[in-house]
Image (tube, rainbow, N blue to C red; front, side):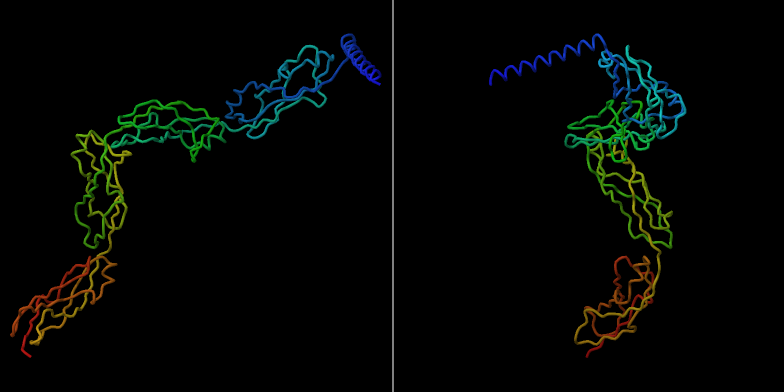
Length: 402
């Protein structure tokens, strides 16, 4: 049984060997014609300048290859590789935005084989986009922490805008050029040439765009810093028909930068005076700061927004009862008048909310004895209300024993 199995194995090996000899003979002596499909042959573009002259460009991330059916002697066919071919696409023809079917031409074919065009000349599908350019601003992002007690002003970027060029799909996305500035542990001015990148409105990189320059010169003042008060100055008076409710700013303090000897002498920064005579309504007004020579402000702040609230000034007449204070139980008090008429004025919203009960008219009879005496009337007004006129400033008081 074992002997029989060994014989079968020997016969199988001999059969394979004989078949191989026969195949070599056929291929070597007969070398029959064979066909084969070559896949993934790269396509080379020519006359790309014609695209650019028509403000067009090929969109990136496209793969351009063709498959070619070839025939020839078997030994030639089976040693051919895709890179042995030269296939070209001429871009000088009529093209438009969007997809274009571009015929390809086989320029180089390996020796011993030929291309079989059983389905007509091959072509590739190319997506073309408009080629445009635009100017974008150069912005900066400052990262890192300075040494304690120091601050930076706004950086100076040169150039502060650049020209970008590329497929409109990508150029439209581009919002600005961005330079990253690292100020970690610095305590002196920064001056450097730093690389830029093109980003969209979300800060994400935009690729496939050409731009020059690739670097910008950055100058960033870094100085000793100090927080000081901002004082709002005014001049003149509001028109007679107006009254000032308040004047304020959301920037009560500001960070100044400079040599230590300079900032030690500065405790506040004033605004340029606001001319109240030209204020007729409530406004938010941008007011310049008066920055001393040699002093910077953080982020190069040169002004603050001031909130000026004004209202119409109105008058109102009110009748207010007189009130005796500090009287003695053993006396009777009789007044020549029991009330006075007051003319008050102020902001319309405040005056309209006031009534007689909000005002007191006081007659103080402390230490006064029997008889008749003329006493002053003391008026107590609510906040933000002023007295323009009173019907009488004194009253005759008759004091008698009970």
